[in-house]
Image 1 (cartoon, one colour):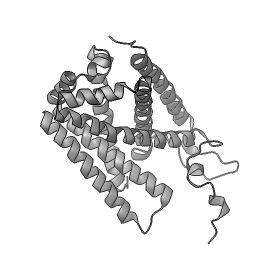
Image 2 (tube, helix red, strand yellow; image 1 turned 60 degrees about the vertical axis):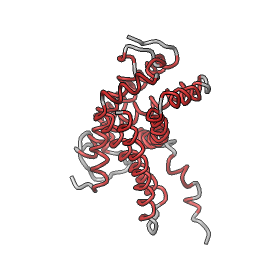
Image 3 (spheres, helix red, strand yellow; image 1 turned 30 degrees about the horizontal axis):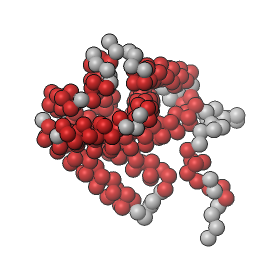
Image 4 (cartoon, one colour; image 1 turned 45 degrees about the horizontal axis):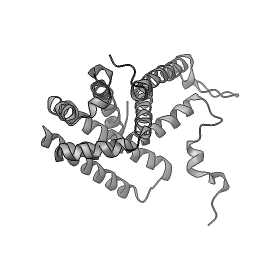
Length: 151
Length: 111
């Protein structure tokens, strides 16, 4: 049986945010950062397990990770950014979905359609989250990559 | 609110994670008063696990339940495995059990 050509692009199309509004970008980023985080979490549990084996095993694991050079810290920086975005956007999603906040009131759909869920308050929160996360991510980068920010 | 149990679990674990993960970041971050490199020593890492065993246990359980349930939701959204949902659930529960056992063992052995 031939596939319906409308679904030809499959998974990529289902994730692509291009041509959509900022909520779609949040949707895509939330899923991408979520997958990054669960991948890191599983590796992190294996890594932390070495603590129970002993100091030699832990030091050997750390030496292996350090042998990656800057890739190790860049990887951690990406994980930190993913956690910051996923957490901050997650708070917005809890407000939206669990408490029904920031969503606007439902209206009859009239052309040209505009999502009531993307009202002024929602936009303010989305862009505030983006700004705060970017600032914290730069700071995390300075701390990890340049050794700055130590208090 | 009429959410499924899966979504309620996702929301509750998300709220727990916001607090315990922030605490974990602060311990590994600049508020520890150390460089990142210094927080990776065996003594500092085991010391944290011993001192904050309950918090790290909470972090482990919340992160695994939230993360793997999230993967299950993404898989359901993308693949619509109507006939194989039970298989997907079985794999996810199996992975949860494995990582929770491994993490719990680490916490108990070090603590």
